[in-house]
Image 1 (cartoon, rainbow, N blue to C red):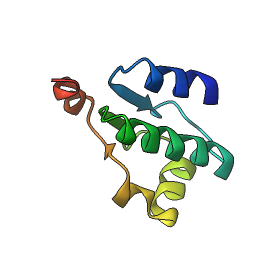
Image 2: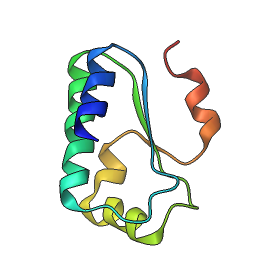
Image 3: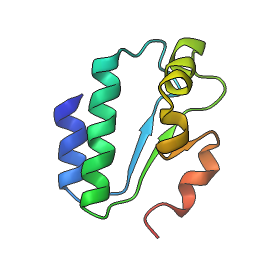
Length: 86
């Protein structure tokens, strides 16, 4: 996952991290996501994390408990991604 995420950032593409199907995330994976967001921001690339209400409770709780849902570009609705990259 790390390599694919970093490669997408390096290619300069707008990035949406889709966690809608995630059933479990650990802190290592969360760290990889955080670093991907940091790299995107340094490269002035748009990045969003798609975390709808249908995502597994454990994943949503991890974002809430760590406070990442308030500091990372988390969205709940796919339609929000339409403006990405414009």
